[in-house]
Amino acid sequence: MLEINNVRKTFNARTVNERVALNDITLRLEDRDFVTVIGGNGAGKSTLLNAVAGVWPVESGSIVLDGTDITSLPEHKRAALLGRVFQDPMMGTAASMQIEENLALAARRGQKRTLRPGITREERARYRDMLAELGLGLEDRMTAKVGLLSGGQRQALTLLMATLKKPKLLLLDEHTAALDPRTAAKVLELSERIIQENKLMTLMVTHNMKDAIRYGNRLIMMNEGRVILDISGEEKKKLTIELLMNAFARASGETFVNDRMLLG
Amino acid sequence: MNPASLFNALPGAVAQGLIWGIMSIGVYITYKVLDLADLTVDGSMATGGAVCIMLMLNDWNVFLALLCAMAAGMLAGLITGLFHTKMGIPAILAGILTQLSLYSLNLAVMDFKANQGINVTKYQLLVSQRNVRTLDLSNPIFITLLVLALVIGVLYWFFGTETGCSLRATGANEAMARAQGINTKRAKILGLMISNGIVALSSAMLAHYQGFVDVNMGRGAIVIGLAAVIISEVIFGKLFRNFALKLLAVAVGAVLYFLVIQVVLWLGLNTNLLKLLSALIVAVFLGIPYWRANLAARHPRKGGKEHA
Image (cartoon, rainbow over all chains, first blue to last red; front, side):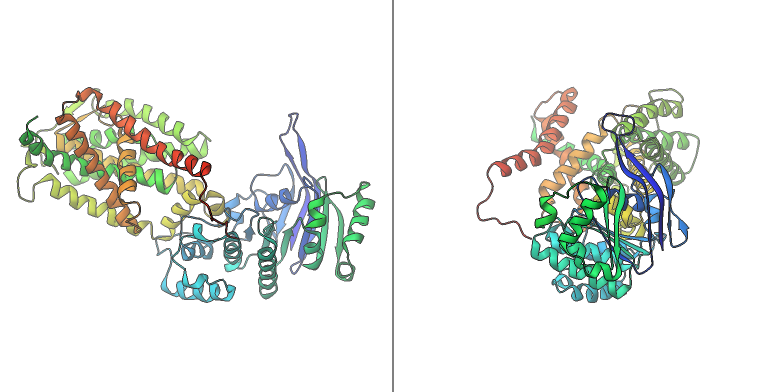
């Protein structure tokens, strides 16, 4: 279970550019929840994920994951509980290292790194099988540098790395936004498959309303650092883009105009 | 410009190049593996020699003295690492601060004298200039090659371990490293310590080789190290993929650097202008990738298609 209690984060505090990115936000996720997060630019979606991941400290409130208060844990320690995929395909992998080395790094998330070998023969065999399942032909290129892969391949690899060691919570931060529509659809399907197979609690930020409606068992909409809409279960299954836009207008008192969200 | 005088100077250039090659491997670890420009080396390139020579003058065993020299270098790296990660000082500035404080510390180690000599007949030195043309096991080229092989072997093993991989990941993509649970601050500190430990070892060997330690012997060391790294990349970059071979290439790069210097001196360049020459060469080679990128951006290749 994830509990986000009254978390507040202000960027550029006490300057003219001051912006409250998370406005005492409260959110609770159950263990099997696959939550899609939508909202306009600057609504605080990515900030929410970064707050959970510990990219910087929050000003107030608490974040409790699986019974552990992680509010003041440094980023690398929280990583033991989290799997993350970023918007930028460059960000989730080490370009100058081999595919198998990247996987081996991920396999040791949350473990003490010792002077034992960084990768073993048994691991290689296991990774080969896992990569073969992706169906991208990466199993034959295990010693290739990740920098040679396409954006979609890198995101698929990052997804594998994020879930290689089963996380308590998977954070997907617009992880298909930088991909072309066909590749994005493939990576999304892969995401869902991995989430279902591993029964992962997931927070997925997306700019695409259709994806937000189609995937997951619950949808939240954010605006000005708060959750303004939270739809789950049967109600979510019946959602349409139109219903969502009307709901947004009611909840926020403004119309939801954002081409990227409509067309995406 | 007598060819014989150049020929006579070559063994010395090779020996010096190999010793500086060990130092350049230290620079490679920070500059290429960790992606940090660490200027501590200008200080630690004298610290190792100072510690080693002073201990030996106090009748310490040569190998114990060498180990202490390495430990002193690692300590210098630790200080730079703490400046950088715990005080938020940019890496370059952190290195400069340590380098400056090392100048005083090195003098203090050397009893506040600018240099300290050590007599090759009275003390058991690891390598000595005196034997550079002898053809037996005391030849400094042979011994330095052994040390070089040892250093490369240990580093090759280390960077294949879990800890070593975490250092490489930190240098390759810090955000990713943290997301995978790597303490990137600790990785940087460890890398700086290893690098400066190697530099100090090289410093101690250089002091042995020349028979004295000088408080200024590290000045410009970072530039020589970068020159070696760049030369190795230009010549062997496409050839060597293996990490051990890359390290070896750096040492070869340092040897080539010293051979070129030797030739330039033989051609009659004023010794005092050497540092100017080195700096300009390194500046040009550092600029080449930038120019190349600009050129490529202005004249994009036709038919290229971004892959999905």
